[in-house]
Length: 251
Image (cartoon, rainbow, N blue to C red; front, side, top):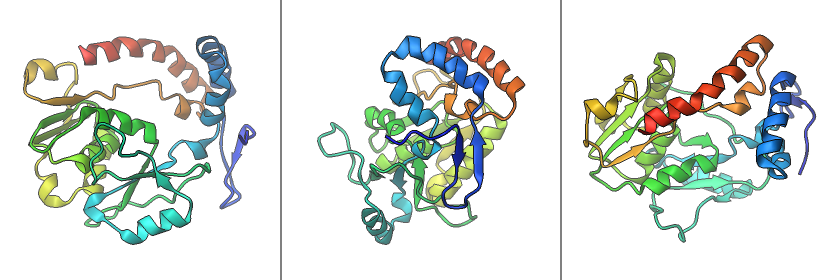
């Protein structure tokens, strides 16, 4: 596997990209080497190589393009999941490539749906595990930036779909994602809220058939490339409190 230097270069533009924050990397070396053992070496390679982060292409069934599928095939992409899974709707199409790289991103354009969403294919496993069926009431508790919400709607059409995001900035990001991928008649059936996820169980007891909890996490890969050492150091302290928040959300 190609092991990059600490300074990640953009091959396309030849411009230097983000640099790894050594304070954060040193912390990870101590923590994860002890926790993960031999597996840490390969995980470290992925964390320090941004081209591996969003390597999967989730197609948008609401903006289908056979030309896009042909392009993916030419570039060496193949289906990430196969029919052997217990639940895999025919409308759910995700492609990956064995060669690390990034498919070009699509910019948000008002009134025009995007054809695909870039993400890590592993993040789709919880969506498939939910086995959402048409007409079921579904809650995406910590929904921003919206990738899993979009993925759920590739699988089925929920009776009621509630997307919640507590943070105002991230909530706006979530709304833009939904607008970019979901056609207007269906968008009108999606409820977006900014409630404290820990209170929804009391506010709406036994209302949902399925709940997806993508709880706030340490977001290691982003903080590894932090340009502000002081802020990164503070984040390393704050991340210790995340487990309590995750537990409260699940409860």
